[in-house]
Image (cartoon, rainbow, N blue to C red; front, side, top):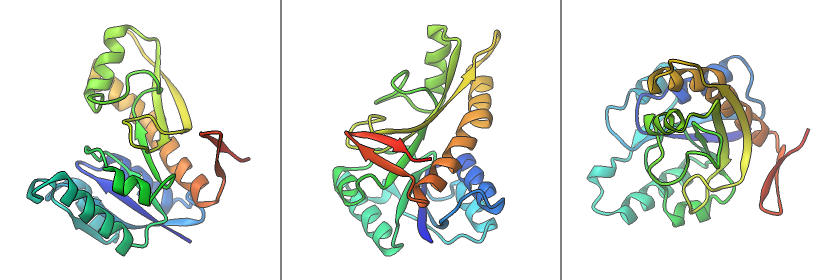
Length: 208
């Protein structure tokens, strides 16, 4: 049974999707064993508490530097014996030290079909605002491995979502969460924990 550690910064809707999937028996070979928040008081911690999952806070603002924050995150992940690290609404970019220590063991969910509307500065509602501004007819979500560049790691799963007339960024965000993010993130976690994802020539291959 692999130890899955989830990093959060806010409300924790993707964390809740993982908890719900775990409770339904949809995550095979792994279990959420710890939640780490970069912000004290994040509602995601209440979700962890309600699910009986141990949690801790590593307050980014209380750390004197980015390096200090990264070191504390790294130590917390090592203490938790993390086999897989999941970024679920974690609003900070991890440093090279953490990424190298957990190479191809950190996954993130992004609310667009990478390589569209991704990279530095594309997060939260900004992604959906950009999609609507461009006038795309399909958007969606992507689960990918994390490397040193924002949203540039190997893609594991993607799911498309229709953009509808009259959509606002908020409406589109909700649809992408419900129809894509909350489905493919737990699925990717389960695939990883079952050893069904391999990196071949820099690409993630899902083994059926």
